[in-house]
Length: 101
Image (cartoon, rainbow, N blue to C red; front, side):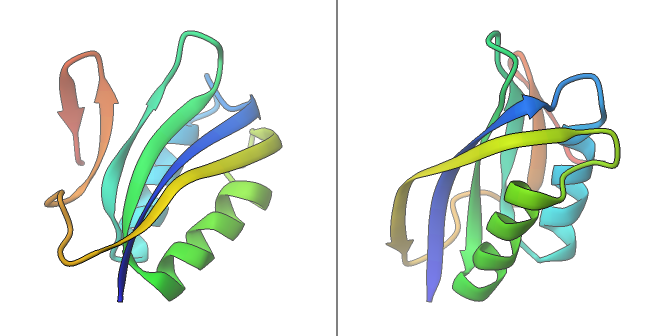
């Protein structure tokens, strides 16, 4: 079953390649979605994919992150089952642009 979950990560998560590592981990787990920095110093995003891969990504976002990050907490909201993924890849959003490399 496919799932969609929004997330927000708090702590030292900007300026430490957190988005790049999040995108890479999402792709490794065959998830689709996006992540971006916020003006309040957090990283937010949406991830979609198989439930077991979502659970692994949740654990990674709570406890691992990028090597230089210091995660204080991670909130997950809007969890729902979906019939198909709404994204074609896992992207980093910057303004109105998206990067998938």
